[in-house]
Structures are given as C-alpha cells and as structure tokens.
Length: 134
Image 1 (tube, rainbow, N blue to C red):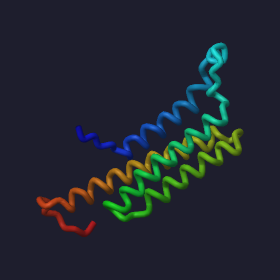
Image 2: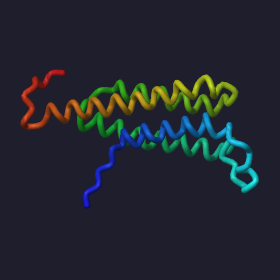
Image 3: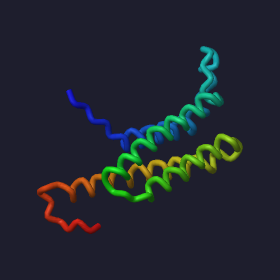
C-alpha cells in the first residue's frame, strides 16, 4: 500500500495542536498533577514541540520549494513563526502576546506552500492548458 503524507497538512495540524495546548491546557484544573503528569509548565515538552514543528515544517517547505514552486516566501514566514515560538519560550511572560502570531505565521506558511505546490503541480501536468507563467 502506497501512503503519501501531506506534510503541510501535518504541519498545520501540529501548529494548531500546539496553540490549543498552550491556550487551553492551563485552564484545566491541576488534576493532572495528581497523576504525576505535568505538561503545563514542562520546559522539555515545550522545546520538543517547537523542535517537532521545526522539523516537520522544514521538510514540508523545502520539499515544496525544491520540487514545485521555488518561492522563498513560505520559508521566510515559517522561520518568523519559529523565531516567535523560541521568543515565547525565552520570555515566557509575553507568551500570550507572541503565541498567536507565531502560530498564525506557521499555519500561513504551510497553507501558502500547499497552495503554491498544488498550483505548480497542476501547471506541470500534461493536460494543463494554462500558461506556464504565474
């Protein structure tokens, strides 16, 4: 069975999951601590999530750049989002101001990469009658 992974969809999902984690989890009662689970202020978990978002994003965006559209704008937008995530982690007191922009930039980068890749895949298809200039 040939399974294809849509890395942009995975990146968008991971970014939204990260935003939900950061926004909703602190609102939950501290009942998780009763079971020995502390992912609200777990620094290792936070850095792991940033690293995971970075790895998935770099793979997806570089694939789209190299194979399809050759545009750097999604990569620049993504790197700005990752930089904001790192800033959120370093200056934790500003996380509620920085996090929405970080997630927005990362999701927009994946969406832009997805759209550009689809457009250029379509234009390169043998049955496409559109002009090759975009």
